[in-house]
Amino acid sequence: MFLKKIYALMTAIPLIIPFNDLHAGNAHVVLHLKTGEQINRQLYAVNDSSLVVYARDANTEYLRIVMIRDIQKVTLKNKPKILLILKDGRQISRLLDSVSDSSLSIFEKETTLEGGHSEIISEVRSEEIHKIVFKGESKVLKGMGMGLLIGAGTGAVIGLASGDDQSGFFRFSAGEKALMGGIFFGGAGLLVGTVAGAATSTGDTEIEFFADQPFSLLKPFARHFER
Figure 1: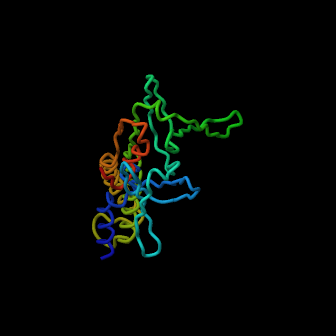
Figure 2 (figure 1 turned 45 degrees about the horizontal axis):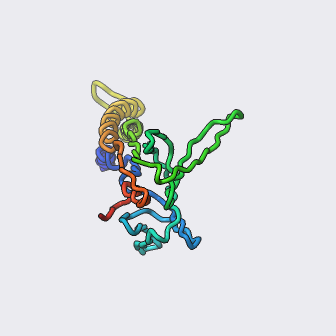
Figure 3 (figure 1 turned 60 degrees about the vertical axis):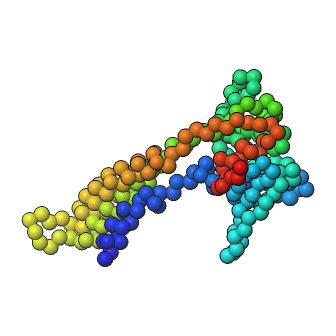
């Protein structure tokens, strides 16, 4: 029974690899309202007149609608990589920090002469922007690593749990079987993780930017968005 549970764990590798894709609608945002209030929630939906955020308190789940006219700025906690294509032809590759009703804040990290790091934040006016490309993310290496780790660990546990062989022409100790199991299941996990990583990788997302609707660029980060 124990070995069957371990085998079931091994076959479930694609389900337990923690791929956290920002483009899949799990963006954590802070809404800075014009009244001074800040709403720290998960983005749920975006339309032309409002943002909807999702919250869970104890056993209660609810949605809160915030009108765009009441929002001064939206900050994304997980900073996505973007490529700004400006109307004058320039291209700027940075991390997106926040969106306001008139500009975008972008930043980059630089290494100082002392070996530390500093963040340089700059603003780009909305009317300067033509398009925005959200850079995709490859999950292949992460999938390979997680698959190898889970597979090798599973194989080692199976080998140790089966104990030393007491009879038979080929007799192996529990340690030897743990090593062989780790190699075999590690290889299988590496293959499964590679496939899962490739399947969950994201491509670039290009959005035409409208200066009069700057918050609409948050649509790729919402769980659902309304048209």
